[in-house]
Structure formats: C-alpha cells, structure tokens
Image (cartoon, rainbow, N blue to C red):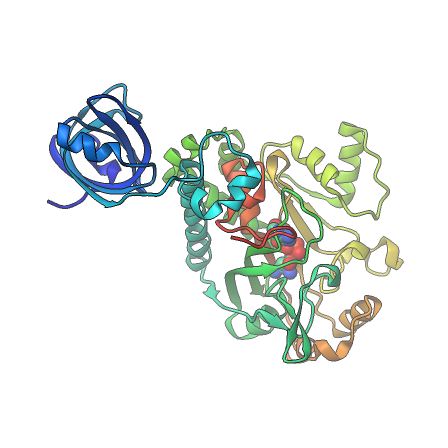
Length: 432
Ligand code: 4AD
C-alpha cells in the first residue's frame, strides 16, 4: 500500500498509510494521541495497543514516523478524522524541540530553520510558491522571454546610498539592486523580457518592509507606452491575487487572512492618479500638507492606501526625486528643472503595505541621460555600455520591478516582511 499525503486520506475508509512528523503529542495512561503533520495537512492519530503505547510514550514533538492504521471520522479531532494506529514505525526519535508555545518573534527568527515547520510558515511558503508560479505564468502567456542578468556589477543601478560594495579581486564592484541596466541592453534582442532574481539593498534601517536581499520580479519591454506599463502591472497583480484566491484557500484560512482587499483587487480597476493629484487628495482627506517636490514618505503612502481597498498607481513624480533613467513627462518639457516630472509610477499596496512596484518609461535621449548621471556625481566611464543602448537604434521602452516579498506580505497579511521569505536577511540578521 502506498503512503498518502495526509489531506488525501480525509474521507477514505479502511486502512491507510501516512508518514510525517509529530506536531503535537498527548500522553495518557492507556493511550497516546499524536497529531501528525506532513506538507499537506495534519491528522490526529491514536495509539491504544499496550506494547505500542510504551514505544509512543518515549516520543517527542518532531519525531518522524511511518504509520498504518484504520481511519474514521472524529468530530473532536483538529481536521475531523482520526487514525487508530496498528503499525508504528519510528524513523527518528527527536531530541527535545526548542520551540514551544508563545515565543518571541526574535527567538523564532533565531530558530527559523526549525520554525519553518510551523503551520503558519508552511502556509506562507505555499502561497509564496503560488505567487512565483503566477509571475512566470503571466509573463510567459504574454510572450515575454525569461532572461537572467549578472549580480556583480560595475555600475550602480539605483541609488548609491543603498548599494553593497564587494571587493572583486581588488576592484570595487556592486551587488545588483536591479537587473535594469543590463535588461535594457538585452531588450534590443528579445524585445519583451522578464526575470525573478535576488536584488540587494544596503538598507541601514530595520523596518517591516525592507530586506537587504529580496526577490525582484522585473520586466522590460520595447515599443511600449507609459499606459501599457501600468496595464501590465495591474494585470500582473490581478493574476497573482486570482491565483492565490483559487489555489490557497486553505492557507489563507490558516493565516486568518481577511480577504476584503484581495477580493476588491481581483474585481476593481486600480485608481490611477498623478503625484500632484495625490498631494491634493491628501490635503483634502487627511489634512496633510506636502510641499510639491518632496517624495512621498511611508506615512503619506499609508494615508493614501487607507483611502482605497485596491492598490493605487501614482504617476508623474517630480524628476528630482526619481532615478536618472526615467523619461521626462511630455507635459513638463521646457519647464524649469525643478518643475519637471517623469513618466514613472509607483504602485502602492492596500492596507499600508507600501510601494509594491516601481516603474518607468526610460529616457531615450543619450544627452539627457549623461546630464542626469553627471548631476548625480556618477562617472560616465562606468556607464559606457548603457549609453551604447541609446546610440544604436534607441526606441521607446520601459519596465518595472516588483518586490516579491512585499506582495507576499500583503497577500498573507503579515506584520513583517521577514516572514515572507524563509531565511530573511536584514541589517541586523544574517543567520540562520
Ligand atoms: O523602486 P525600485 O528601486 O525600482 C527599481 O529597482 C527599478 N530599477 C525597477 C525596474 O524598473 N526594473 O524597486 C522596485 C521594487 C520596489 O517597488 C519594492 O517593492 C521592492 O523593489 N524593494 C524592496 N523590497 C524589499 N526590501 C527592500 N529593501 C526593497 N527595496 C525595493
């Protein structure tokens, strides 16, 4: 007889075989109750045979077992079924498991390699897997090629303040914050490309939204217009949410996730507004007076997200707060530098989950890019390959980057981004 995943035993009759780990164990005088878990679910098992009770009495939480026994309905059991064990094969009797009830978040992070076995982390990791699959599916269905960029870089892609420097055989190099600069070069061959890869940010603050190593889903596409980028982004997020709502009902229940914003995101069109409109809205609805030209901070993004039950797309930020590669908005051409805006957008997640996506049309004009880089104090020598992309058949193009753990955090309703990844890396945490 084959071993069945625990969830596949529910509703069966007669004898079944399952294997897994002891989630909980309760020892009585003449019987032992074991809640067994595998990757699929948990099931209550009971040992009644006196010889087996003796062996089961020695067992500790997380011991690994193979079990054969009769299955039947049992209303008092955690998942409604019980197996009366008639064959117990102990694979490994665990040592005393260090994790008990009500432990502090820091302790659980120290024990993350063991805490991954919890129902909560297992549920999150399953949703994470669905999300990665949905991203691949979305882009491949739309005719994008998957492409990989290098991690060691000679030029900084985003902001110099959050870049990790690496000693590369005595030469200074950087860990990739984004695939973008190399993706823009690749785009001239494949036209529509995407990736999911780790990005690195030397974030000096410990917040509930920042990791130093996170997974970045990025796309770059030739011949696109600014609206196309926003459409792709909205469709991608909807596709991810729909997939999770369909495939992870059980996990969302384990996480006690309120589905309100997920369901709204699946059905409603996302509001799209310019940065200037956001300032007006925040003044009117939240009495927040933000001087034009200042970037939106976490508090402002949170206030904005509280006004909607779906993600919000904010476009046309002031040029001075955005990256050198963003294309100037046609509406501000010829205006003084400090009044210019760019065709970039951020997608702000609901419920205060912050910026989930950063995007832009790319500046096509080599002279504007050179001027922007020089203003930021960058050495043009390091950007020769990038500048070449504007020398040989420059075309309108754009792309975006989505922080996958930020999306997971929101979809799972997590308090901290650290739970969206198995082994989080932050300024203060490098292990396990
Ligand atoms: O807005 P960012 O910096 O954009 C870029 O890197 C572009 N080059 C992307 C592109 O156009 N190809 O980062 C994109 C997203 C953010 O919206 C955020 O979701 C996530 O990456 N992100 C982080 N996620 C976790 N921890 C951090 N420290 C993050 N920094 C950015």
